[in-house]
Length: 528
Ligand SMILES: Nc1nc2c(ncn2[C@@H]2O[C@H](COP(=O)(O)OP(=O)(O)OP(=O)(O)O)[C@@H](O)[C@H]2O)c(=O)[nH]1
Ligand SMILES: [K+]
Ligand SMILES: [Mg+2]
Image (tube, rainbow, N blue to C red):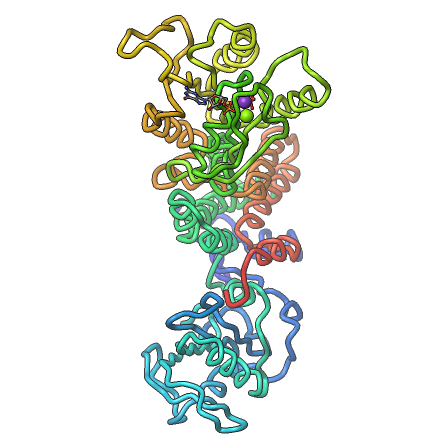
């Protein structure tokens, strides 16, 4: 059976017999809620949020949200001297702006670059010869009428064109992220795609870029959409049972089927949540902490990996006191690399404080780079470090979300060359010489493997949860499904499904609250 209504909801119950009509239940049982379909985005952002005048509105044909009043403009390429700078506008006065600045004044054909003379509409002063493009809404990035001016990138040209646009009635400078916000409001991007776009702009490493691109492709959103559909179907089944449970016509097993589907969804969500912080680590960097006894060469390794003199290196034990940290791209993965004080006892108060800070940082580490002096393994500080840090961490069952450790024996140049491994009893380790660079390639290879486990491989597997927000809503959804299973009453069970669905809607932006939007759009620059 298939049910549909004028709001585009379609619920298939897999039977030829029409047994009930759920339009009344689903649409009216929870007033104020959005229709069950999450796509296209049913709730446009309030016009007020654009803070623009509410004058000339021209509905973009077919766009789900009404056009906002004002027309915005901004430099969309980077600031500073460059070959070509791209300035764009979005809003109902885009066509007027384009005509006002260009000669000849006719609009170019849609989406085709045309060479035009640009001049100031007030003074008539020539500004540049530039390529201009016209994107009538809704087939544009924002869904509104948009224009682009590809001008020569000198500061005087750019400021001249921006000033000229500002003098056109109805136009005002865009705020940070406003183009993307309009795209979201017009259903051009889901919230998770917006986040992907923000991450893409800020991506600094290969792996970050790959992850952002996948999110921009909407993979996480599509996954949530599929889950929401399962919940919608289960909810329809439960509500049918509430209304027609006594009815002989109701097909058998309707409720069982709902429960079965919920259980399958629980398994899928659980697996996804076990990905834990991997996506987030990839977005904001894994914490890699260099630790070990004094003089093992921790600071030397810090400088080697970061390719800059972050830490002071000296033959004096206890040189490093504070935690020193720097962001480093390690084998394509973003990391926050920390150098710490050598761990030892019986020292003065300043070094003691350094040791306390080092221990604190060790607890927060995703990956510990444990460094020992290969020529000094029998010293008390080496033995203590092995017993207190290396062996206990290695003994813990390794999991992607748990802490990981790589043991590095530095100063291998001091060992007799080409002999057998002098330390077969130690946990698995790598030999390195910070002095000669020998063993560095092997260390980088091992780091890459560890970071891939910690951050996940962004090119394969299911899309990762890149923000705490994603994890929060998936967990909320899972918890609600738990309540569904425990509910003794069908009305409570239906409510639990609604709560679960609400969490998925929030994740993708269907139930978008202003605060979440503000936080996400704050990440954008003006012109994006
Ligand atoms: N021969 C040799 N010396 C090294 C190597 N790595 C570091 N050293 C030397 O070992 C001494 C200590 O190096 P640091 O990098 O300051 O060691 P650290 O672990 O940071 O020391 P603290 O901060 O005092 O705990 C310095 O004199 C370095 O030049 C190496 O691979 N081979
Ligand atoms: K030192
Ligand atoms: Mg040091």
